Amino acid sequence: MSEDRYHINIFKPNGEFQKTEVKYIWMILAVWALGTYGFQLLLKIVQRNPQGESFLTDMQFLGFPFHYWFTGQFLIIMFILLCIWFNILIDGLEDRMGKGDIRN
Amino acid sequence: MEASFKLGPAIILVVVLIAFIAIGVGHKAKDQDDYWAAGRGIGRIGAGAAIASNWMSAASFLGMAGLLYLKGYFALAYVIGWTGGYVMLLVLMAGQIRRFGKYTAADFIGDRYESQGARLLAALTAIIISLTYAIGQYKGIAMMFSWVFGMNYATSVIVGTGVVLAYIIIAGMLGATKNMQFQYVIIITAFIFPLIFIAKKLGYFYLIPEIGYGSAVWDLGHKYASDPNNLKYIQPWGVASTYKWIALCFTMMVGTAGLPHVLSRFYVVPNTRDARWSVVWGLFFIGLLYWSSPAYAAFARVQNAIAGVQPVKALADVIIITAAENAGLPQWFTGYLAAGAISAAFSTVSGLLLAAGGAVSHDIYYRIINPNASEQSRMMVSKVAVFVLGLCVIMFALKPFALIAQIVAMAFAIAGNTIFPTFLLGVWWSRANKQGCIAGMLVGLTLTAFFFFWGKGNDHWLAQLIPFTSSSLILMPIALFTNIIVSSMTPPPSKEIRKFLCEQVHGIEFD
Image (cartoon, rainbow over all chains, first blue to last red):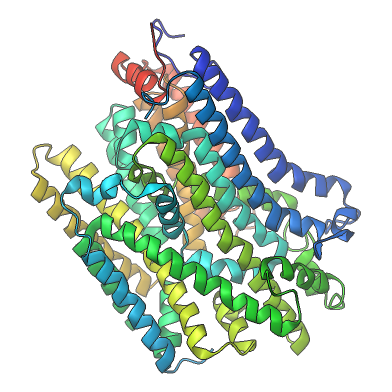
């Protein structure tokens, strides 16, 4: 595609560092998408009426209907954990590759 | 809700407002760098609090609980969109934007795509987004002023804008950032403590009302389920379809990751690592608010169910005040709650006006019209711009052109359909060029505007597929592919910018 080495493409990572970085990005985004949209689709798949009732809405957890707890409370916790996880991974990668200083 | 003068709340509000200005004046901006990037010395937690305070608007503080109160599970799509967007922003762009090292969204776009046209387009888009969003804050400000002082809407808009303008212009962003940390404390304490009182009054677990409200939600679906409206509250698709839920959530996510005033927060931290970690703190601080809004909404619905009345749409935007009053919260504390709501609106409006002022003085005046402008004249233009834009906001806010929630939703859709794809490709695809950027942004802007004006209240299948408040699920990919296709058909960007992107922005070392 490019006649020189200066190219960036998230689908064709440039160099070892970026290969690992992009792998982490897809990993986090996969969990992020599954938790957010995957759970809504799951609700849709297991529903027994068009309003979306199912065993997931009948189940009680911490007082909540389970689906309400999962979306309203757990997903935000998951988002924060994902951000922490990503930062730890990238910090570790930067330290291993000795890139902490130039990337700042 | 009665609109009469209330002494206790008025004193609390005035004290809080004076404190904002005093803190702003105590931290005067020294020069342009100081004005924009606030000295870059506020640390990760401080930057996180600033992200949260900048983010938490009247829409979050008042509108969110109101929507949840009316729409139950469906409205959780806003909560998830507004928090999940930060994950996307962090993993895809935060560090890279910080390393690119530009102050404004237009600066990034203009420099990355090597085009003054793209810069101008981005600056104008940023101004449209900021003003649209700011107008949306005034309903909140006005409702709170009218509750505390018994003022009418017009008076509250003018008084409120006056106060915001005063402290931005006097103190610049350093003051505003310091203010933001202080504002965050006011906002969050005001929001969280009344809940304990309300939960206790209703007999739910009150030590952590964010968990205790679970039983209130359960009761709405069981104990009070004889009213079908209460049942709809907890049913996943009781109010709207799965598609609508997902489209709305996605639009809020890409909108969050494309709002210029959110993007510009990353320049306030000293380095990339701090930029990334400040997102974690910011998200946690935002989470504290969003774990609590559904609790207000559920408790208010249970109060309604016990009293045997239907939810009132007109009360939705002030439901947190009404719920607190219904539970018999002392009036001075309800006043503190109102002060929190006003702080939330003020911090967002100041962030938005700064972003819009920056677009005028830095992107349009300095980078396009007069590159030799001195420090003083840029500072002056910036202040004048903030002032003039503030006046524009007043004019529109006095006569809003649509419902406030619709105005805010449009700001998100514009950001998600224009700025987000342009940043994403700018960071992650070095082949994206100025033609692609301009084409993508124009397509994004045009289609968003079309579906807003044509699609509103339209039954056409296309308007159902692309709901005007949730258009990004379809339109963001269209804008993204427009950029990709047009870029592929035109010459690649210069070697200089691709080298910069590789070495500086992505930190690739070539041997």
